[in-house]
Every structure is written in C-alpha cells, then in structure tokens.
Length: 175
Image (cartoon, rainbow, N blue to C red; front, top):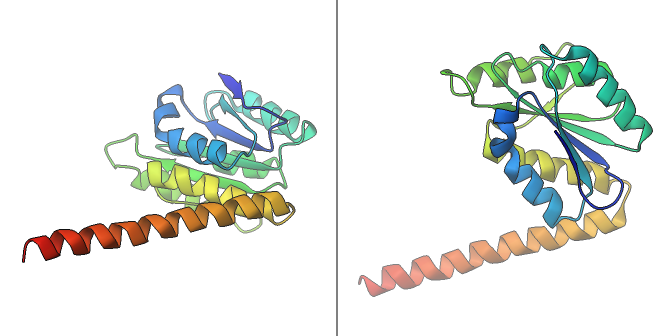
C-alpha cells in the first residue's frame, strides 16, 4: 500500500501492518491540514525487512526529509528505519496487543545511543502529535510551514477560549 499526496512527499508514514491504518488517520489529517506532502506505506521490520530498508533508501533519494513509523507489539519498525537513515524518525506506538500499546511504547522509546527515535504517545494522540512534531522539524527550514503552524496554534487557542465561554455560560445557567 502506497499513497501519495499532492507534491513531492517530504514525510513518509510507515506502518507495520495494514491493520494500523485507521490508527494513523490523525497523522494524515494533520499533515493534510498543514499542507505538508506525505506518502504512506505498509512495511514490517520483521516480516519484510529488506522491503523496509529498500523503501527508506528510495524515499531519501526522492526527497523525503522525515519518517513517521508506527507499529504495535514489538514495534521495531521505527528503530529499523532509524538504523538506515540519518533523517529524523518519529515513532508512534500502536495499541494493537492485550498490553494496550505499553509493549510498543517501550520498544519504540528504548533505543540505543546514536540511533534515536523521537517517540510520541500511544495511538491516535501520538499519530497527531507525530505529524505536528514533523511540521515543527520541517519548519526549521521553511517559513511557510512555520506560518501554517502559527495559524494552527491560533486556531487551537481560539477553540480553548470558545470552550471557556461555553462552560461559563452553561454553569451560569445552572445557577
């Protein structure tokens, strides 16, 4: 499975299994909202290791600047990607086992020195934050990405202020 957005992808989203796809929709939503071109592929650190390494090397030649790797269980995908690139890798632990993602979290966050993986929260919140973190990293070299992030931050702040007004009004109505 490989899907591309408009433009040359600068972010690659890798998932260890097609069953992880729904858990990464938040990353797709955020990157799309921020107009950051990305692609997605399914590849496994364990079941298709050569395919994973080939994909990472090819993605780099095509201009991918950052990898988001999501996996559950043993969750070695982000580590394998990090071992084969010098580009930033953000790991998203997926809650796909009876351990509710705790196993994936530990596998993703406990990388040996020199092969770092930035690790975000388990599940949807992690997928969304991986995309936001990717945008922040890309923003280091792009004023347009930084400007888009600033607008998104303003939108988030406005939603908090709106929520505050609604809660105050609702509580005032209850006397």
